[in-house]
Every structure is written in structure tokens, then in C-alpha cells.
Length: 235
Length: 218
Figure 1 (cartoon, chains in turn red, purple):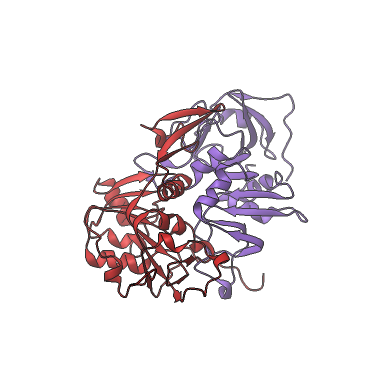
Figure 2 (cartoon, rainbow over the protein chains, first blue to last red):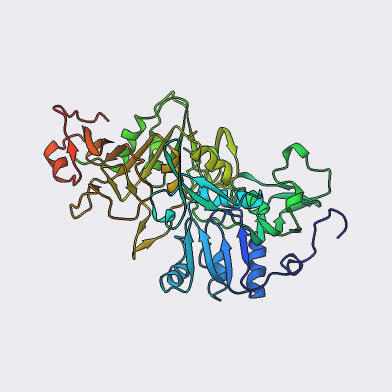
């Protein structure tokens, strides 16, 4: 690697330095826009005691769900965890700690973490179990709770295209939490479908500037679909 | 007769206005999209990061990178835009969405809503529901009026963990359209063929009944 070139040559190198009990911030919504191969590498490494910050936790055999059978995840911070039998079992038995966080609050926690903002007030969750133990303030007659930002030791991100400098372009709703996660990692690792040379991406069209990206790798993706819904061509 | 799921969606659709940006929750709310009145333009917001959600794709159009908040494959309508989750919830929290429709387990006379968790039973998470109820001004809750065993879901106080506090003003059930104000339920309309007595019987929270309660027109 030289200069701004962020490209690494193996998944092992991409996740080098990940240790037990670290926090990982992850992009993705359901199985859409997830860093499939980086997750597979975490499974291969067998790193344990992880705190995962991710909107969801995958399904039993795909996404972050693959880290559950070997008990690699100690705690998950997520907004919705409903699609996974092993997850439910570990949660009910107390093996897995779950911190349910409203989706917008989760996104903002990542954004704030990446932007150097330690905490923010939001109306979301006021008067609900989410507010327990949190500072409350009133602004202009409305109630707000204080939510703290999140920074991960690592962030794992899936983008569509990148140049070698780590400038990223996402595709459709696979963008979701990925640009936010990208800002919130001490080490941000990104996998993409295609890497091009610097200058080939239009600077006006870049979603995430390369400054946030530490390591970049090109992969191939299964892109599994969770709910395949179709209409007939005749409609 | 209690309203069917389709009829609930039909009645909600009457609340739409031309040029509205609308967020529809999973379940009955999703069906509202099928009843947008002809000639009216409505743009659907999907909180995973899509404004201008289109219909389901054909087999040929399926794209794993294009889903809605229910994780279903969808398409984009003309004039759609995509964005990240923080942007999506900035729209929601900043009050930019004109109408939000979502389901619930319980609502009460103080506008509290419980919709995401049944302790010991169902723990899946709130997704974007807490953001939606806290951020939106114009919310319609769609739900059944009572459980299968006849236990009211319109209560003096919610019994389940809250999704939001004091944020619900309109509830459409299979029996009635109800407004919440001043710590009371106010009966606005009844489902076709449903009597006021039936509604009273299945409403546990204080219900104010005007002299004339019109039947819904579907």
C-alpha cells in the first residue's frame, strides 16, 4: 500500500487486528447491503466476545447470523432482530445481550460517532423503555432523551463501487446504514463489487469520501433475498 | 360487519391528499398503497432509504439491492430517490413526512401506543416505529378493536411497553374511526352495520359519543 491506495489483497489482511471483545459497527439492512465476505472472515477467525452494532442480526445461516452458533457475539445493538431462531434462543437464555435501539437513533448514533459528536437529544423513545436511565430535557415544550454516539473498533461496510483511494458509491437501498458505519469505525473496512482507478468516479457522484476508509477489497456476493415478492408480468 | 383488512386500507386511503409523502408500516398499512385515489399523486417513503417506492417487481426486474422496510423486493416509482438511514430518519424525525400509518397492539386515551413488544413472548424490536411515532404529527393507527377473545385494545392505560408517549391522535379499527383528545376517545365514525353499542362494549378507555355517529363510506 502506498499513499492513498486502500486496497488490500486478502480478507485476512482486511480484518487483521480484530481481537476478542472488540466492537464492530456494521452496515446493512436485513440481508441487503451486508459485507458478506468480511462477516465470513470474522467467522473463520473465530473472534469471540464481540459487540455488534447493526440494524439486524441476519438469518440463521446468512449475514451476522453465521456468527451465532459459535457464540462469537456477546452483545448486539440493533433495532429489529426477528428473523432468526438461534438468535431468539440465545437471547431468551441470556447468553446473548440485546440492546434494542430505535432505527433512527441507531443511524444517528453512528453518524454522531463518526462526526465527533458525543451525544444528541432526540424525541424518539421518550416515555418508553428505551428512555430508562437516560437524561431527559425539554426544548420548546417537547420532551427529548439523550442518546450517546457509537464508535467501533472496526466498521464493516459493503459498497457497490470504489476507486483505489476508497471513495465509495452505493447502489439503491443497499446504501442504508453503510455510509454511516463507514464514518464510525476506528478501522473501516469496505468490500465492493468493483474497484476502479482514481479519477474514474465522478467526484460529484461519490457518496462516501475515501478519508473514512482504511481498507478496501473487491469481493463476489451472493446477495441473498429475504422476502422475494413479485407481481406477474401481465399486471 | 367489522371491516376487512382491505376495507381498513380503503378507509385510510381516504385520508390521503395529493402531493403527500407517506410512510406505510408493515401489514394492513402496506395495503393502503392499493387504494390511492385515481388522479392523486402520493409518494411512499420506505425508512430503509427510499422515497418513491413502486410496485413489486416482475421476475425479470427483481434486484437484491432494492427492498422496502419489510425486506420485500420492490421497484422505484418515477421521481424516486435513495439515501442512507440517517437521511431517511431525518425526514421522519424532522416532521417532513405528511402521513404515517402503522399498526399497534394497544393505544390509550392519552395517545400512548404500544406496538413492538410483548414481554416474555414477542421480542423482535421496534425497527423504525419509535422514530415514526415521535417524529410525525399526522399518524393513523390501524388495528383490530379487540382481541379474538373480546379484550379491548383501546384502553385507559396501555399495559405493554410503550412505543411512544402521547403521540397518537387517530385510530382506525375494524369497528370505528376514533380521535384521541383531552384524555378521551371520541367516536367519529362506525364501520358499516356496526352499532354504537358494540363499539362501546369493546372500548375499555373512556369513549365520548356524539349524538350522531355516521357510518363510514367505503
